Image (cartoon, rainbow, N blue to C red; front, side):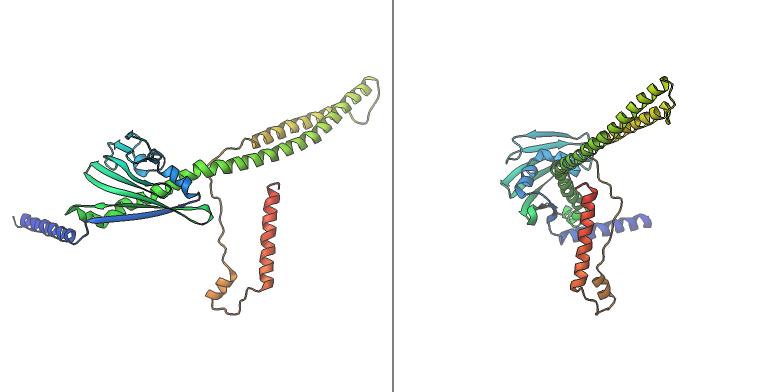
Length: 317
C-alpha cells in the first residue's frame, strides 16, 4: 500500500511540476527558418505561392505516399484550400488555406489541424532580394496553445523546426532541379556533342584515308601475286592492316557516339581540398614577419591563371 501511495505522490508531484511550468510558459509560439535560393525573387515567389508545388518539397506530404489531398479553388490566390487525410499519425488530417498574398513579397496560410489533435496555426513566408540575383526565403510558423498544452511550446523547435528547415532546403533543391539543372545540362550536352563531332570528323578523315590506302594496296598486291610476281609485302599483310583499321574506326565511332549520349545524374563528390592561407598559419603561430608582398601576390595570380587555362584547355576550349 505504501508503494502505491508513493507512486501516486510521485505522479502527483510530476503533474504539479508540469502545470507550474506550463503556467509560466508563454501560450504564443513562433519559429523562423531561412534558406537562400539562387534565383530572382519573383521567379521564386511564382513557384512558392502554388500550394500544389508542396507535393514536390514538403516533408509532411512526402512522409505518406498514400496521402489523399483535395484541392479547392484557384491555386496561388486567397481562398485556395488544400485538405489532406493520412493514416500516418505524423501527418494526420487537416487543411490549409491561403489567407493573404502580397504579390512577389509574402503569403500567409492558415493551417487547421483535425487529427491526431485539433488546433489552428499560421504560416507566413517572406521573400527578400539578395545580391547576385539571389532570394532569401523566410518561413515563420506561429500560433497559440491552450493551457496546459502550451508546455509543448518549449519543445516546438525540436518537434517542428527540423522539418521546417528541411522543407526550405527541399524547396531550394527542387527549384534548382527544375530551373538550374536543365540549363546546365543543356550547356554541357551541347559542348560535349560539338567536341565529339569534331573528334569524330577528324578520326573519319584520318582513318578512312588509311583504310582506302590499304584496301587499294591489298588489291594491287593480289593482282601482282596473280600475275606471278613476288612483291615484298604479301597481300594478306595488307588485308590484315585494312581490317585492323576498319575495326579501329568502328570502335572509335561507337565510343564517340556514346560520348554524345549525355545524361543528367546526381553529382557525386569524389574529392575535396582545404586551402589555408600561409599568412593565417603564420599569424596563428605568432610569426609577425610574414608579409604578402607584391611578388607573392604576382606568383599566386600566375599560378591561378595557369590553372584556369589548363582546365579550359582540358575541356577543349
